[in-house]
Amino acid sequence: MKLSMFTDHCLRVLMYLATDPERRVTVGQISIAFSLSETTLTRVVVFLAKCKWVVTARGKGGGVTLAKSAIDIRVGQVVREAEGVALPADCADNRHDKCAILDCCELRTALLEAAAASYAVLDRYSLADITKNRQALYSLLYFRPVEKAGQSSA
Image 1: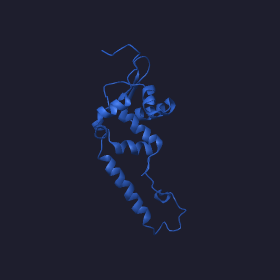
Image 2: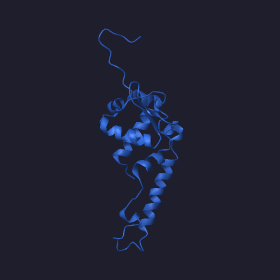
Image 3: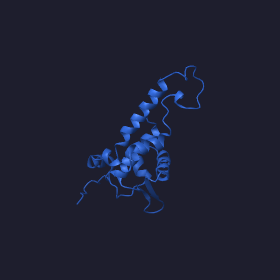
């Protein structure tokens, strides 16, 4: 199974938010953390909001937060929604009729079973599971302002 960049970005945004679930962050902050464009991440956030995994607020003090607890967001569901129907090969699509051996080929069955097994594994993990090292993730993702010479943080 290979995930699209869009799915990868969806998972990254959710992980970012899960490191500090009470904090509202901007798309700009997320884009800096992952070196991704704000335009790309805006599309991702809109999708995540449509799926009801995040809540967005506009204007001053606006930003993005998780809409539910990280334990209630299943990785498999995020991947399913972002990727669409898992079709490991063209023949997995029931509308496909270009294969000469489709009627007697068992490869299609094996590939569909493999895709289902991949999702079954992902379904075992929640966003909380994949971010249980929250403090380490936080230290890598959240940047503190650079102190000016002569100033110290108190």
